[in-house]
Image (cartoon, rainbow, N blue to C red; front, side, top):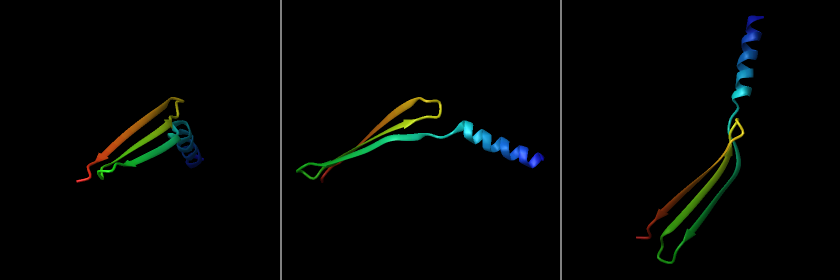
Length: 64
């Protein structure tokens, strides 16, 4: 009986904690005539508490 109680407590705690859910994700890559390139990634995440955050990351490389 104790094993079942312990297992149900672990499973219940995982259900309460939850994990982040990706709402949207996008990436845009561009290359200019001089050979340099850039990319912009944007990701929107919904957290277990209902809050939503958006993260934007930009990277640039030179063509030389």
